[in-house]
Image (cartoon, rainbow, N blue to C red; front, side, top):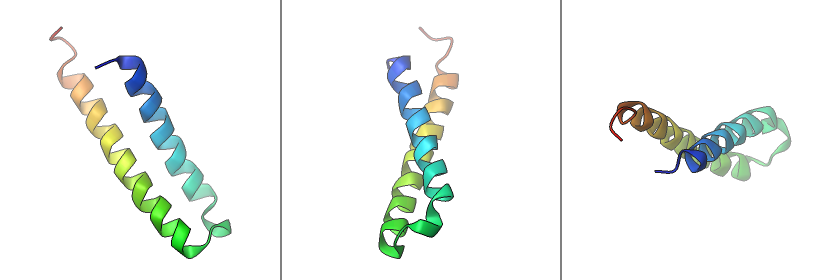
Length: 60
């Protein structure tokens, strides 16, 4: 797995989560719920990628 792509995805996932949290008051309820679910899924995948990178760090 290309580390550059993983790093970009991780930064983007956490940024999306931060934006959803900061702008939750100005979003409509339906959009807020959908973006929150997508953000949770992306952040969970980002954590999985981080753990996977740590587990496979020495096996190259």
